[in-house]
Amino acid sequence: MHKHFAVVGHPIEHSRSPELHHAFAKKMGLELSYQRRLAPLDGFQANIQAFFQAGGHGLNVTVPFKEQAFGLCDTLTTRAKIAKAVNTLWMENGQLYGDNTDGQGLVDAIQSLGWSLTKSKILILGAGGATRGVIYPLAQAGASQIVIANRTLERAQQLVEDLSEFVPNTGLTAISLDALHGNFDLIINATSASLSGDALTLPHTLQFKYAYEMAYGKPSSFLQQAEQRQVPYSDGFGMLVGQAIEAFYIWNGVKPQLNEFLD
Image (cartoon, rainbow, N blue to C red; front, side):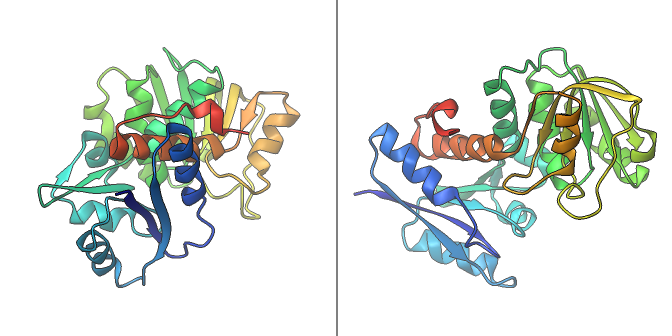
């Protein structure tokens, strides 16, 4: 009797989750099925209820339903509570459980590159949901300082206000994107600017050892600038694989090795 999983979103046809989960299952010797589910924008709740009623075991949630999934859960993990978004769902004793594996996926991807997060000083560009979801796992992994830079300074300040209590050992501060400067171990791009024509120019007053782009599969001006500076960089494919492994682990109790799936 093999378990059924799916990823739900709108749009969904681009999702690489099925191939990842099938590859993990093959590696770990498990039988499972994992499909894409397109939910209508106003029909997310009915879609996931139907999935679990039909005996589905676990669901991944992608754009634009992560905040909605958060609101439907009976029980949330700490990291989901802090992220205020859920990308991994499962049922236990009639209760809907929710977690957010994005931040841990990012941490695992960074560590698999051999970049240390211990006592690191990190700059994150953008103050949206993607940033909110990764602050706590980065702090847990040992970041000593995290600076959030955003076009609208107020949004970054709000995030600092919301999250400081959860990361007592990490200095959390906000700056405006116009005021980028300083020396960082790692810079993470969590804005969509590098994918649109609205490219962000990183000033020379800003120095960094490593550059990570959360998006993947498209040309990124952010990574081009890292390359010009001869700084080691990576796109977000490792984060995608990392968050999928973490979800797979929650559901199946076994954890594939991230590095084996990065080719």
